[in-house]
Amino acid sequence: MTITMNFIEENKVIVPFFDRPTVTMHEIPIGNGVPFGIERISNPDIGIGGAYGTWGKSYDNVTLADLIEESLGAPLNEDERMDLAPLGFIHRHHLPGLSDEEQIETEVTVGTRLLQDAANASGWEAEEVDAVLIGLSGPPTNDYIDLISDRAGIRKDAMKVTVHKACDGSAGALHLALNPDLAYNKRSQTNLAEVLSGKKVLVGGIEGLSRFVYKSKDKNALQLFGNGAGVIGVIPGETMQFLVGKTHEVFDEQGVLAVHMYYPHSGQRIAGQSLVEITQDDENHIRFAGLMNEPKSGAPVEMAGNMGMVKLFVRNGAQVVRDVYQAYREKMSQVGSIGKSIEVAIVHHANLKINSLKQKTLSKYGIELRMPWVIQEFGNVSAASNMIAFLRELPSFKPGDHILIDGFGAGTYYDVFVVSLGEPSR
Image (cartoon, rainbow, N blue to C red; front, side, top):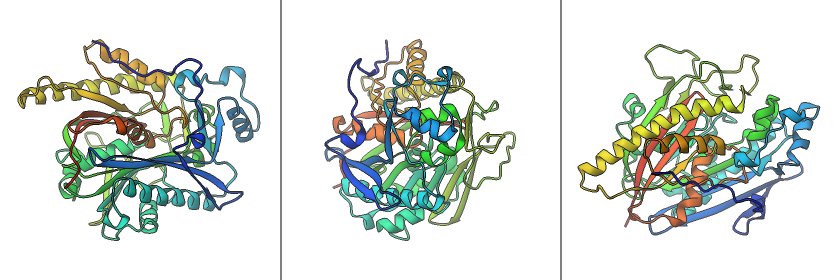
């Protein structure tokens, strides 16, 4: 058996995201005006909708060099330039030149509109939303979810959950909403999957990566990452049902992808205990914060090199997918659905090389999955990528389809699980 993946077609022109005819453009009145585009997608057959988008100036693989030279004060050497197209990235969006206060206001505006559009695409009004779960690598403020929820018109008593597990943030958030047996749910005062079953829930990732990547001066990070956001609306147990899954932690001892923690965490690592600290200020606010190997220089992010990252995530990530796939096959056998299969794997778009090598590794074990590469206009957008990829595949889904979600990120953290897409709530 083999895994099929949608590779990038040679000579195919990838238009910038803002030029897509289905994107609605806005301008945020900050500085000289910040361009901001959103695309709304819904599938009424399964009752799921959502919205995704990005903000800032679009840089292709050629004009990106100008941004990097502006950041570093000098051009990249030829041997420092990454060949980005084979890694799956043609465009990305950055927003240099704003003050910290302007960056915060920009991201609050983005988040507010995204929640409103995601709710509407799901067929809901904002005040109907019962919970908001958002993955963020580096939040602009610690009360970010409150700020955007309040502005969006979401009720004060709605659950607000923040997940800091780097690129795994949105997959981790969705896993929390669906799996009552997840270890984090068992540790928390509130088992989110139990509380949110049958409720209207917005889940996603909002990543203003330009804000801190631009300050990092890391030559690899500057080339790979960009701004992006995606939020979906689900009703756990109805429009999306949990089947099997696994979460996994492996501390990044070598600091292959070192990330500063712009969120509350003790910084302590205790043998035998989870790297994720859970804090609950009240019944409506929970934070899941993952320990990172922080850059020794104090910089926002430092990458040891692309190949080191590839080896780290492929080795551990493929094993987690294998474990979940085996659990899925066993579950299908138990329920008498041996012929049922996973329609597609929604995999974090760290870069195409990581996903391609994961493909080859899994194929050695006879695992067949479709793993489309569908994000070329954003760069690596961390926790936003799983949600954007899901939304781009959403129109093709049918009631009863089984979908594998594969999230992974710095720290390192892994959330892999299979869901069944159901009928819309009647």
